[in-house]
Image 1: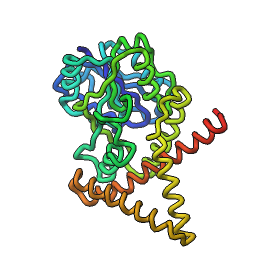
Image 2: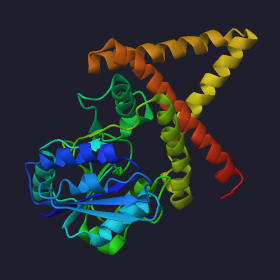
Image 3: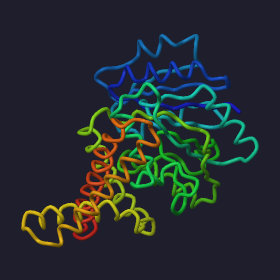
Length: 322
């Protein structure tokens, strides 16, 4: 199978260098790479061209449209039997393409997704963020999980679609705010087979500090409402959890300020959650520092998502504004 790896890029020249360095090491060699610069001010043309000879790589520049439509630009120019999408802040294990090829050979999928994890080179904050996004105690636990809730939806940091999917379903119809989930749902609705390849892991850097992480997860919360506008049936009870958690924290704080006795129950629950996250992360990461940062990451994730979710739920569902 010939793979086309499609990478949208926006003002991240150093990240694409690190990603391409990992693709050079792939044990499976039948692939091409398309890097599409999406209106960047700081382009990576010289960096990408330095890999010519090591990789079958092509570099394109276009006006800024967002990641969804930039991936479509790549789809239109790809030569492969199968298209694989990565975010530019990913590192790819050397056996990734071999794992995907073997899996598709034995159990073919029209579209697939894979999980993500923390690379040894990541900072403690990045490892804490990675823990939070994959922890069973946050909404991140449903990402890349064999026993996820409901239908599996590949995410665009690690996602593959066959050429047949592209020819029938087309590409992304929205460029941001949940474009990958909308695409996954639409692919599934057309009768294509979608699944998780659990061993096709990538190392996803995500954000390097909690302010950036908050902004990203706030965006994710808003994206869930955007998906609801396309597919109302896809809004599940689990998606309300971060909003409920955020309101719980707010009322616990208010009750403490007012001196109400019910605040003691809220404090106990918060302490229990903190200890649960701390010791689970410590067990997973073998580091007390990462465990402590995981508490901050988890609370940042849930509250940012919850605020974004409530913001657009109020505006776009209750008041039906665009």
